[in-house]
Amino acid sequence: MRATTGAFAVAMLVVAACSSGATAPAETPNTTTPPPGNQTPGTPQPLDASVYPEFAFGTAPLIIIAPHGGSVAPENVPDRNCAECVTTNDANTQDLARQIADSFQARTGKRPSLVINVLHRRKFDANREIVEATGGYAPLELVWMALHTAIDSAKELIGASPGRGLVIDLHGHAHTVPRLELGYLLSGTTLRLSDSTLDAQGALDGSSIKRLVADRAGSIASTALLRGTASLGGLIAAAGYAAVPSPADPAPLVGESYFNGGYNTLRHGSLTGGPTDAIQIECNFAGVRDTALNRAQFAGALAAALVTYLGDQYGWVP
Image (cartoon, rainbow, N blue to C red):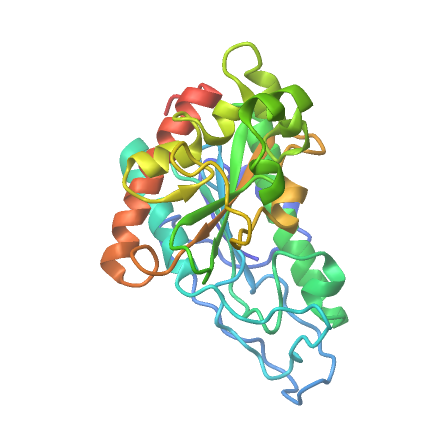
């Protein structure tokens, strides 16, 4: 992991076993190159796990993960070919993640922690359990562990101060409906239930924002956190970006494609405990990821929404 320093630099002690890269200012992207060695495809070679997950600890209770935007494809690492393997990248999500972090910092003076997988998805999937993530290629296991160690370390620092925070797992989709899809580990079928039914069933106790729902109980309805005006989807929609779930689009219709969250949302959200909630954001291409101008505009809108969300729901004051 190539790390950059900041107020969270002490967390380097947690990841020292996985990290050997040089440090640089938080605003400076790392330049990553494949490690030297035998380039014969399929030949197991030791991999420098410090190179491929790029991370920078921040000073805000926010972690942004970009797992599927990498472009590095070393010849000595075989392509993943498992039956369930998806190998298509999420175009421009690395750049988008960096711009969101930059915009957030410009607004608050505080920077999110940023964890980026620089490997191409056909080599490594940073949103899967270890076997599917690596395609069974053992040397990549250290990369997988380094990536999640970085995220876990940033979460531990949030847990120490200010205590509560949020993980955003940033993706791109190519579904027919051009909107942002926010994943809370709740299926489309569940989202199509009425607010009263969701509240009565305690459905959000099975979500990746379980801790937030518990913390805010008595102050705001759980479904309002999911798709009300104060929800992240509601804030993004108010900025002019269609989103589901949100007040205007509470659930995907029957037959509409919808990503409800993956491995990172499950592992790093609060469903199983811990100090952070997690939301997966699947970004449509046109108007969001397609051009540099659109990425900059969306990054600004999402950063503003996240500042409001962290303030209103977590009590965070920059």
